[in-house]
Length: 226
Image (cartoon, rainbow, N blue to C red; front, top):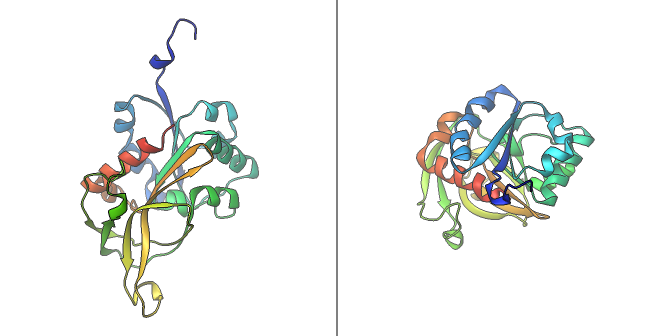
């Protein structure tokens, strides 16, 4: 490699941000840039979804962090992104930046493993349980159950996810009737050779700056990387 050992080449992270400004994509992603650079990543930031058409760039990227809510992918953009993750590029993010966007791309949604459906009109306080059988997973190891005050997401998910943390949506909330329902909050999954990390928490920077949320999100980004 031109006299340079492969070990000396930094890992590469691509931060893709934009879409609906209500989720503060710039401020939210800026929270995690120091952790990425501190972990040895060379970070590129893109505010243009056409970056997903750059096959050469994505092939050399170890981690994509996406924060892009209420967006649309062209077929070429979707194909490029999904192919890169399937080939080994990690994919990670939070809240609507992953599951509240690109809803017309079924390949994208299958890769991510979830789709946002609903949340109560007001922010509420709710508990998040670390799944006992996943307590040793590197994303949540050593973390205790915690409470947040923010949007409580109701989502469609699939059985391919490994749920690391969950919440209970109580009867009467979200109009679901008489029975409480347990809902995933944090999950991981594998897509081909790539890893995917998602956390439902992250409506605003203040959510992500909560110490436990910041810790598990940072760990999730690093876990997903190739």
